[in-house]
Image 1 (cartoon, rainbow, N blue to C red):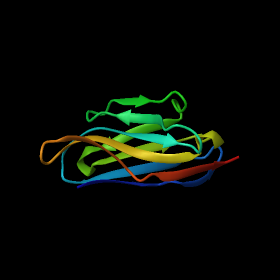
Image 2: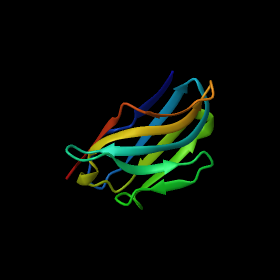
Image 3: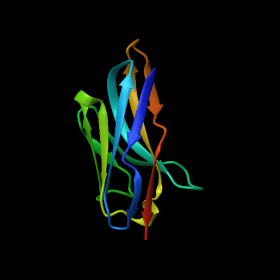
Image 4: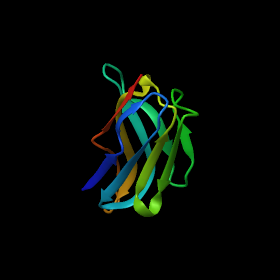
Length: 120
C-alpha cells in the first residue's frame, strides 16, 4: 500500500507565498516522476509542475516563474514553493507520483489534495 500525504495548504492574501509538501510512504521501490496538479471549482485538473527523480523540473504555463518544485529523495518528499500568489491560483492541489512498488509494479498515485485559497 502506498500513500501520498500533502500538507501546507491554507488561506493567503494575493502576493503571498505558500510551500506545499507531499510525503510518499508504503511499499515503494523507486519514486520516479513526482509532481503537483490543481483543480479549481468547475475546471479541469491542470498541471502545476513535475520533477524527475534526477531533479529536472517542468512547469505549467499558468504558474511558470512563480513556483519552484523540488524533492528530497531521501525523504520521499516533493515540495512546491509558490510565490506571488494570485486569486486565480485558488484550487485544490494534488500530489502525484509515478513509482515502482516493492513488488516491481509500475503504478501512479494521487494524494487526497490540499486546499489553497488566495484572497484578493
